[in-house]
Length: 265
Image (cartoon, rainbow, N blue to C red; front, side, top):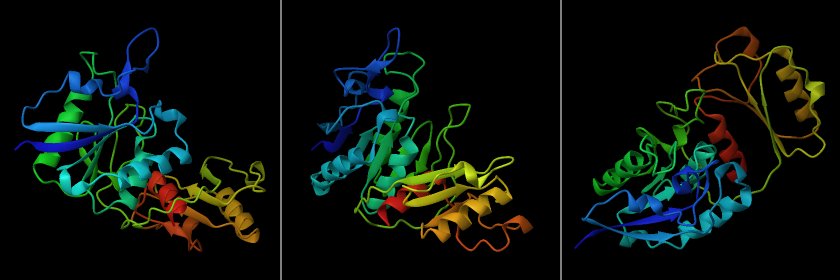
């Protein structure tokens, strides 16, 4: 009997075609035209197909509904085909919501027909992971990474991942909050931010888990207005004097994970 894997195709570059511009292909499962494994029977669902920069909270709810409809007992696992631009955000959402499921999110740097694309390699790595009995939610992009640990790609188009992070919230209840994400920068001025329609604030710290005074001022304004506010750092502790007195720091956490936790909390 063949192994079975469910594919949830959401679009992205892995489901796109080359041309003057990269655009969505009518066949968002085209990866199966380039990857072959006689030992696997692939089934598929496609609740929507978009370029991932167009992703919104409503899409996540549709994705959750789709995942909830899958009988995981009948499959070795699920592969989600996704765009790379917001891959880390969806990985954090799925990782927090489905920590007990076997799911791998896969993206690509170029459409599958491009000979320089990593689409087939990334997809194949996800398949082998699931066939080997891999447990949990992962991202397959040049290597396998725990979904909750992945950060968005940098200037080299490579994804990085923390060694560990906070435990999943284990909630599928998405609350569409208006979250302001403000990263620390030189001469940061809290007066540049209007908080009138903001439900929560996340402030990204400098790489050493430090912040300028403007970031503290922004947090103070949010607190005075009754708006939840958290500082976010990938480091496990904030050891500099400029972080003294800040008691609402999410340490060992990516901004993408912090955002997902804010919507699912």
